[in-house]
Length: 340
View (cartoon, one colour):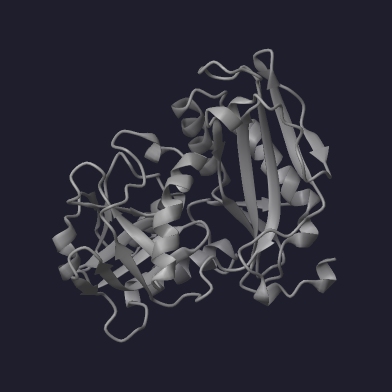
């Protein structure tokens, strides 16, 4: 089947692979790792995942490097983040050791689906935990299923590494103050669907949300964190409503490595008039440069890219991160897990 795939033209969608891996939490403990070829799960109609939203997930990638080796990027950071998500909505946390073992196992089992070096594609890894106990009372489940599927994907944004326009719409909140925004739960993404689809229908690639409490400060883009370059500094919003992006964390470290001052702080909306570069960042897109930010409520347009090209700092950070993921540059921070 892999011979039929045009690696350079993959969408960010789902393509079947050979295996997924699963593990069940019952009687207060995690069981053995199971390997499955089934693309379905058998779920009770009263499972808490279906009724009360006990569902969390992660997203990470494996890359075929310049040397032919397969690298998984920042595996342990995803393992730690899904633990925080589990704690946030009262689920059984998956131990770091179990998470890492299962990720490595599923990548190894599906290694033929890791796209070749130079294709621009990668193997997307989707860990998922759901509550499976049958109950109708509002309380945490006692049994859970943790599974990991993988699929080869192309770039998240079909435009590639080119500036796109994003917009601000005050009528929508992605999450509530002190709500579930800090955790990677499916409900956060369900809450962003209407705003996202409306933005797409108007020709925008994403929505830049404002803080849900005062509507004064930048929050994040629906599927990604936001950062900007202002007077040579890397600035990114600080908020309890934002999912801690592993990509943003990585870019901040690379910025510091380059001698760039990093500021994680409240960013007033009006400050957009003073920035020189901006991007949405996350696992799927890495960094998606912003050309213009349109405030649809006030009609104000913040032009970020004057010439329609990505800015020099965003470009340098993007290229640096990609080079590390692909084994083109030394991984001085030990971010990659190499699959033997």
